[in-house]
Length: 276
Image 1 (cartoon, rainbow, N blue to C red):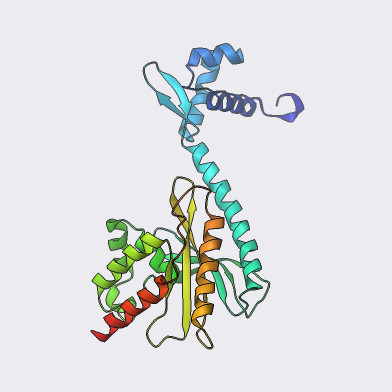
Image 2: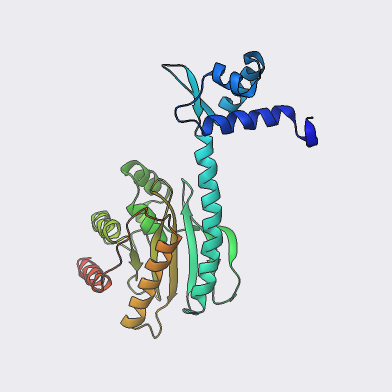
């Protein structure tokens, strides 16, 4: 142990990491040795461990050490944790404005869209965390949002896990109309769901993280009883504003939903349902 009870190896490893992170184009082994007054033979195992953990990487011409991807991953994890905290606060704020709505934050974990945070009228003022409740990707607003931004391969894999004829047929006439609506979702960065014969309305907006990654979907759902067009538009705008506020500044689409969008899409759905 070094002075103050700090491990000498840990202290040296952090010094190496900070020094390289602050350099413009990385540092050679000799430069690190000269700056820290530590022999190359002592530095080598420390640098090797940092490379193995992803905190450092190697570059050529000249051969030098540079920052690795682990630092970026730690930054994203920190942003995500802070976003979850802000999302919970936003949910509590909105529950006072729309007390009859279920407010949620969902994520795609690589296999399914799952609910991470949830606030319901049955438990006012309580944000339920780490729900991991699997959501139907076809019939939920958050599910459709993630599907709209998926690559072809990701979409095919999801539809293999959740077959359309089992999970999606009751919501959609066929796959092509669903794919066409995904274009609307990507264009407006917003989705709403009002299934035929359903008793609820749902809407969701994207939460964009660092690197323009779709980190989460912020959504609301509520019963259709006494649900007016004015109230519907208000819910949609609250969702758009909340998802934008939770997103990384300057990342993702910031277009607000136009007044006629939800009605125009609904008319299209009615027309498609008549073709069944």
